Length: 220
Image (cartoon, rainbow, N blue to C red; front, side, top):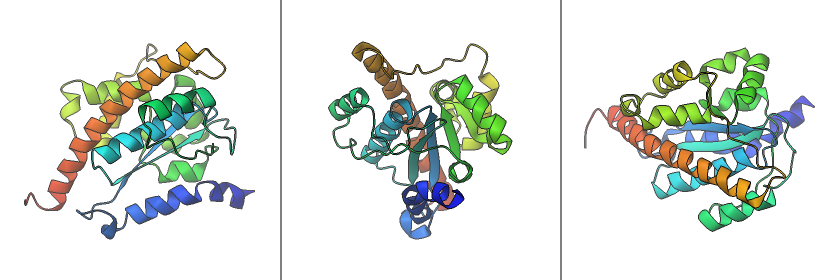
């Protein structure tokens, strides 16, 4: 059983290991790993993963690995059809194969940042894996932090996570689950995720440029 669970993320871990080698980036600094988490890993987190990957590729941010998982994943399932249709409309080059994955300790260990869709997701992650608390934050809280001054000018991930966690409250906004809801609900959820992924992509582009400059001693 443990061997099977470890193999679930074999492809993501392989790509992550490759990206973290000096040859994988022009600057040689280690890649950043971001995991999206929802319930079934077939709607929200799957869409967010694909959208952010596409945005980063178009921004030429190649040293960030994005993957996703579910707290109660429909393991092996494809992205839900309505969300997949919206993804194909908006990110035609991102709509590749998706296989839902169950969240587990190995995936959390690999992630530098864990973005969850709801307060309940964060409670479940932190209750089972307390050591992940320092890098697990609600997606909406993180996006507020990266979008508003003065925090948006911060390029250190650990500082940004703390800022997002400190600003979180009982009023933090969950990303609704569109599963089995209307087409309109799916589109509204996709709209919200698009907004958040664009904010994250902009921040990552800036922060990785700063990291690259630091790694090269400010040359160039």
